[in-house]
Image (tube, rainbow, N blue to C red):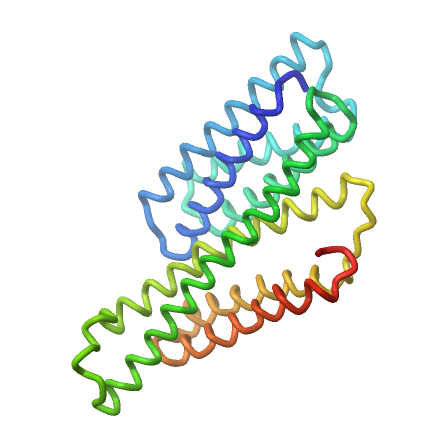
Amino acid sequence: MFASKWIYELMLLIYSISLIGYFIDFIKSNRRVNKLSFYLLCIVWVIQTIVLYNQTFIDKNFPILSLNDGLFFYAWVLILFSVLLNHFFNVHFVVFFTNLFSFFLLLLSLSLNAQAGIYEQGSEFVHEILIIHITLALISYVFFTISFMLAMMYLIQYYFLKEKKGLQWMWRFTDLEKLDAYSYFSVIIGVPLLLIGLTFGVVWAYVTSVEFYWFDIKTIGSILVLFVYIIYLLLRILKGYRGKPISIYNSAAFLWLLINFFLFSTLSDFHF
């Protein structure tokens, strides 16, 4: 790989934003977000194409001669496939998960090359993957916390309205429909952030010499947090849960998040 690490960092940043946009479009079917995500994905593909061109015609190294380069080329083909699917067909489900898999391949390829010292500042790049993993996970927890607070506001206001109590200060809360919608949207943002963050974490653990435990309690707990909030989205979208039932589930999901963050961190052999 010919480029400095900032090019790869920029590419991964753009790709991450594109993935979040595709997830939002996948859940809420937003054409503007879909277009923005499509353009960002095209930028990622162009950057990849430039890297491949330089590697093939300047470095005289066809990008399938090693596993690491093969992964990069594989990701390039998948992104091209996603771009064509998004442009000519309306298949959001396939596009999102194809992009998610190609993102994993691209990140793995860049990390393996960095670990092998293929380009400058490779060790810094691998360390930054860990920083990104932690940062994205914490930001996703912030969105889940906001969602929980909005859900609690919904439940409190629902109770007082039903009991006809505290009506003189209910205006401070905003209406129930907005609280429910904002709480839902916060989860929509938090889920892809946590998913991408966990992807960074898995790749970092794979390419480093650190002894990584798939059965580490914090690792399992973090994956379960993701699945708990995915179930929230499924209940909301497929089962039509709204208002009080989904707010109660949201509160229980946040309780599991707290257990994972505070208790499982102390019991983990890998995390701290």
